[in-house]
Image 1 (cartoon, rainbow, N blue to C red):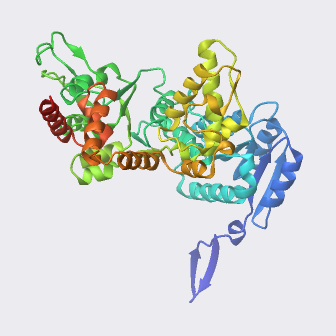
Image 2: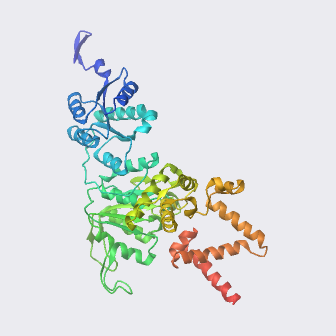
Image 3: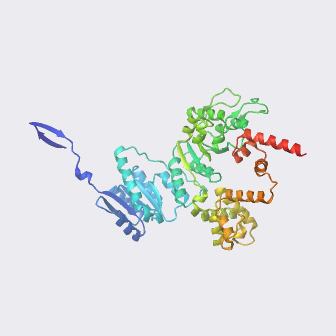
Length: 497
C-alpha cells in the first residue's frame, strides 16, 4: 500500500509490486540420473525461472515442502519411494501443484494412474529433447492461471485395475491421459474410432479407474440386437408386455445401477429408444416396457461409434439433444495403420496372451515377420491383428513366427517381384477392385455390377448369420434397401429354376 499526495489531497492507491511481478518461477527436478539433471537444468533455467535439483524422492519431497515450486518434473524410477508416490504426496500436500512425471518405460497403467492422481502430464524421456521446454512452459502457465482463478480441485485416487490397452505411440499416450482425466468424474464419454480399434477396452478402463469400479460394468452392442428387442434389453419388460414375454425381465439399466453401461454402436439405436435414453440421462428414471412404475437408476454412460454422429444429427437419424448429452467428453482412438510403432508391442502382447491361455511358451517374431506386420494396413485394426496372430500360432510348427506362418496373403517384401511389391502399397479395397476388374476381363459375359450386388448381399447375410440389421450395416445400406435386394435375389433365383 503506497500513499500518494496530489492536488492538496491525500489519496490511497494500491500499486502492484513490480518485484513480485518479476519474481522467478521455481522448477524442481527430481531424477537419479545426474547427467539428465544437468541437461534439463541447462534447458529450463533462465532469468524468469530458477531450477532446483534432487536425486531422491524423499529429498525431492522435502525440497518441495520448503520451496513450494511452481513445477515439479520427476522421474518414475526413484528411491526410496517411486515418482508415483512422490506425486501422490505432493498432491496431498498441495492440491494445486503442477507435477510432470517422466519415464523411459511408461506403461498404460502408470500413465492412467498418474493422470488420475492429478499429474499435469506424463512424458516419455525419449520425447523430452523435443518438447521439454514446451511442456514445462505449459505447466507454468497453467500454474499461474490456477493461482489467479483458484479453481482447481484435487482428484481422489482409486484402486488400480489391470486393463489391456497397449500402445507406446504418442496418439495412444494421449488416449491414456484422457482416460485418467475423465475416470474420476461421472461425465458421459463418447469413444470414437474404426471397428476393432479397442473402443470397449477404453470404456472398461474408464470404469476400472473410476469410483464405480467395484460395481457392474455392462456392455451392449446396439447394432447386434433387433430394433424391437433393444428397448426391452435396456429397460426390461413386464410379464405379458408383448408376445413371448412370459416373465418379467430386468433390463440393463436396473442391473447396472451405480455402475457403468457401455453402449457400443450407439448410432444404430432407433429414435424411439433414443428418447428413453435421453430421459434416463436427464432425470435418472425410466419404465419397463409394458409397465407403469417409474424406476430410478444411477448409471454412468460410456458410448462408442464408428459413425460420424454429427452427420447423423444433420440427417435427423440421431437426436441432437441426445448427442450433446452423450458427447460431453470425446476420446478418439486412431486406427492401427496410423500408429505403426504400436504393432510390434501389440503383437508381442497377444502372443504372450495366447501362451498364457494355452500354457505354452510364447512364440517369438522374426524381424522379417515384424516388417510384414508393420507394412500391412490392418483394416480390421487391433482385433484383426489379434485374430491373425491366433491363426498364426495354430499354424506355426516352430517357436519363431516367420512371414510364411502369418496368414495375410503376402510374403516378405524381399521375396516379391517389383509388381507384387507395388501391389502391397494398395489398400485392401483397391486390391479388391483390381481383382474384380480382372475377373470381368477374363469373363466378358459376367454382368459385373449386378453380380457384385447379388454376391455381396448373400455373403453379408452369411457372415452375420442372417441378421438383417448387421448385414445392412456391413454393406453400408439401410435395412429397407437390403430387404428389397433380398426380394429381388429371391425372384431371380425363382426365374432361374
